[in-house]
Length: 408
Image (cartoon, rainbow, N blue to C red; front, side):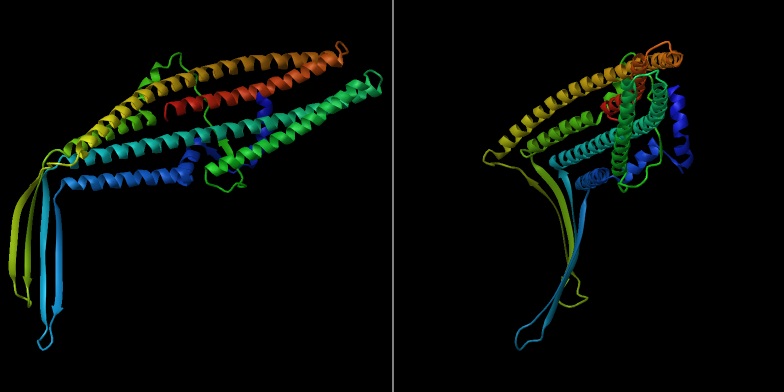
């Protein structure tokens, strides 16, 4: 009965709506327009460029140079001189370079995990906004139906009071119930407006821009156990970021240890020079260099010790992140199951309240029950209707929270 009532109440709005915004479409729009998503994407792009720059250290480096000068002294003709040439170098043994590449790779994976984590949080906010607006629209439609029923009840009580079959207290209470329903209706309208503003901000739209019809898939039924989601938990952004931090710490430790090792590189150059073009006095050189640290005042030893401590700290953070992610996912999973069970309870209670309200109303019209019993049943029905709407919204939010706990 409630669903039919809501559908009928929403038909005019659906007929006027020019389009329906699906959740996937809104998510794409949010990622493209949200400032936080844009900043996160730029950070990821920056990390990718730094990785490319770090990898370039593994390859040969070539450069070209040229110089020209004209000089002279008093009493003598001025003279020209020039030089130009090429040079190149290639690292032969430099452990710090591969360590820098691994550190840049870890930074890139950390930035990717941070980006995915932000999109997960924004996705939860978007789904919460969708669920809130859909719930508020249904609550507003239900409030309109309640207003109509309250007005009909007031007219019925007034007729009975004028006929001497009902007391004045019943009339006054019915008027108060109608005024309360009007106040609640205004509150529902305000809440809907605030929720629509929040959605527009997420989507990067103007705050007063009209919000079209929304389409949000129904949450699936929760399984009996969390085990089917274990593999997805291993790719949680926080866990990926913690693993990247461990890899970065390992690269830092390798780089610190590399400070004690020799470094070797090969280099070569070819150069032309002269005082008058096209003189071509040329010179070339090929060689290799090796450097070995002998004394650094304890700096290298302290650097290695600090890197080892940093690695131990990163490994501890990884274990802690793994425990927290699994516990949070389990809590969200249990809340999802609880919300699904509560929706079943709310549906059964609503069906019972609708049946009893219909029966008591017939009894009251036939003079077989009192006004007070009828009023109590009417209030109970309205409460059950609102509880059912709240239970549906709670289920949508619980499922969204579980998806966020999975990092998706």
